[in-house]
Length: 336
Image (cartoon, rainbow, N blue to C red; front, side, top):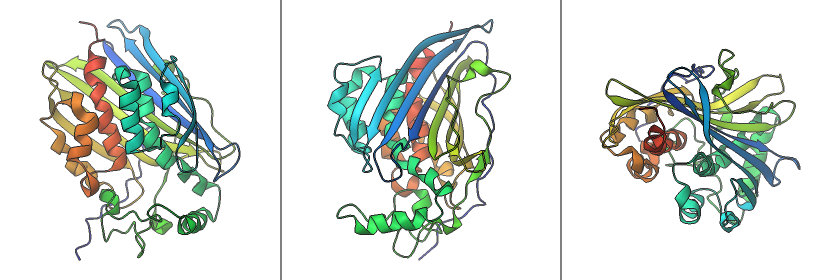
C-alpha cells in the first residue's frame, strides 16, 4: 500500500484580520460552543453573523446580521433552536442531526434566506458541531481515551472509524490507528492570538471573551471588493478555543484568496493556504482545491461537495469554499 503524501505540520496563524478596504464588504460569522453540564452532555451553540460595508471614504455601515442559539445533543441533534431575525419555520429544524441532514433540512426549511448572514452561520452548524468537542483535549488529560471508550460502547455509527473521510484520513495516513480511528498521538495544534485587529476594532462583530473553561469557537471572515475588473475575495477561517494556560489554541486555520468574474459568477483563480492543521497529510487538500476554478461560485454549496469529495478534499476547507457561494450576493451590496 502506498502511503499518502505527508507535509511539514501547518502550524502558523495569519494573525488578526486585515484592515478593511475602502469600497469593500465584509461578512464575519462565529459559532461559540459551551458545555454547561460538562463533557458528554447536551451543549449550547451560539451563532453570530454580520455584513459590514466599508464605503469609499472608509465609513462603516452594518447591512445585515443574524444570530442563533442551538441546544444540541452529544449526537449533534438539534434539541432546541431560536433564530434572529425570527423565522416561522425555524422550529422545523428540531430533531435534525448535523451533517448532510442539517444542510438538506436547512435548504428545505429556510432556503429563501440563502445569501444572508443568518443562512451562512446556520449552514456552519454542521462543521462547527463536528469539531467543537476537540477543545476538551486541552483540558482533560485522558480525553482521547474517553472518546475511544465511548465510541466502542456505542450501539450505532462507525465506532470512530475515519478512513476515507478526507485527505487527512486517507488510508495509510499517520493520522489513523490500525483500527481506522484517529491517532491523536501525532496531532498538532497551535497557539494563536486575537482575531480582532487592534487598529480596526469594527472589523469583527462582537466576540464574547472566552476563558477559564472548555469553550470552542468557529470564526469565519469573507472580504469582497472590486479591482482589476474582477471581484476579489479574501477569506479567513479558524477553529480555536481557550486553554488552561490562559491563551488560545487553534486546530484549524485556512486563508483563501479568489478572483471571480462578476457578470458570470465564474471562479477565475483560487489560492488556498493551509495555516494550521492537525496532521501531516492535511495540507494536501489545498493542492486540489483549484479543481473548483471554472465553476460558478453561486453553486458552490453543492458543487464543492461533488468536486472535492472524500479524500480529494478537507471537510473544513470545503466549508471555507462553500461559503464563497454568497460572494455574488455580497457583491450586489458593493458601491458602484
